[in-house]
Image 1: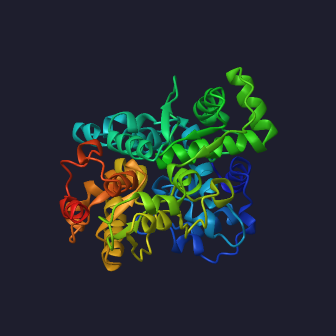
Image 2: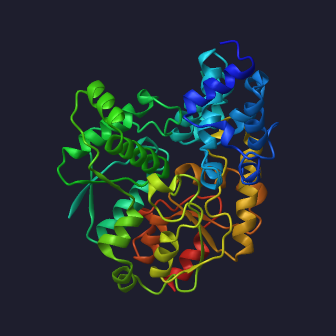
Length: 128
Length: 284
């Protein structure tokens, strides 16, 4: 999976079960996004690039900023489960060994403190 | 009445206060929770990629074992556990493929008929908010409470069935039953940043700031939640952003206070934002 062009769009469609071409670019997903101040590319833009068939999407950081809070999913007037689209982008990266969180990244202090659920959820979503 | 209960890994250790206060408060109301004889972590997150059944195995095993208790119900209180168990249960019940694959893998025969319940639902449907009102003292009368649902309890609405995905009301009704006043709180179903505390601390700090600001704007004297990760994120970033020093409690702790349970049974000592003022009000 080289992640070029329309291949990424088709793979995302297959893995997420969502049709990116339903998106009408209203931006409700971006407006309510938990990570909107941190993402390089907002969910609406991610959807647009999927429609264009842009393989460089896999190198953007947005999918790793997503907190899967499902606000976008709840609000999309076209019924797209945008969180599933983000998950599909993560999955494509994870399958080629790309991820953003490694156990070695975590300091002893936070490990002593943080609830177990944060570790399990973060590694499931953010590591390969 | 004893009901099968899944505490989950975080409640076993880091969020013991949520486990303790939930059990203690429900026991006072005649609902005994009996922990499942065997359990593992629920998996914490629901897999959003299609056909990722391996991500549902842990929850499916818990559900299959809970069904063998014969009660027909499974209570769980952590927002993550509740979210994942309820969604996996929904998948087993409604998808032939999910049911077949998970049962084949686990060598079980579970049909998804269990009802996965949050204690707030038990309080509403088994105890009744009207009856609850008659059980509590006047200690919390007029206390302004921000009901923080976070992201996991109410979405997606079709699977969680917890009220409006962005404006659920059960926690406000619970607060009113305790004699408190639900504060206006526009951030009640917004996300605190969740597991990004391990990857994007700045994001979490920003969301926590928004949450405290919204709670303060509504005049809240306390924020309640049922999520150990929300509780952790809010308290961990509290020093910088919680100028009004609003304590963040579990809803079950607030219930315990209202029921006049001794605070050493509610895990209320040693917190960053001290709930002492609240407790003094309750003791008055």
